[in-house]
Length: 146
Image (cartoon, rainbow, N blue to C red):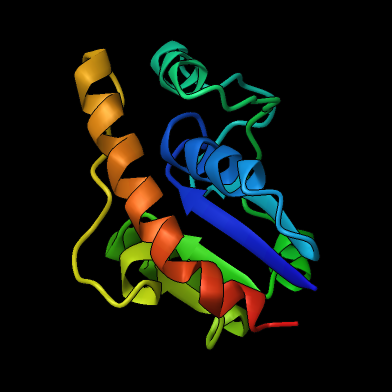
């Protein structure tokens, strides 16, 4: 069983999009959640996040969550959108060391997933493409967790 936690800033754009993409792969034994380092609990995903996921036929049921101790304990992998998020997670939860990576780092690449917040739908489409490529690269690694 692999528990994957995606983390971004407000948990309304990138991390819920990543969560929905990975869930849509329907991998047995893989559970997925998302949270934000500075999220308010209970917000919906952004309109453009929903639109881009709809374009790809990916369902989304989402309420934003802030980072909490129980999520850190639950996760086998904590995958952040940026190096800044990774540093924030580790400063808030030092026990997350060893299982916290940027998504691109975990996928064997460099760089951050850009924040589409407030941008036009085209920026969200670009973020979706980046997330999909990185998630495709980590699937084997996550499956090997079993």
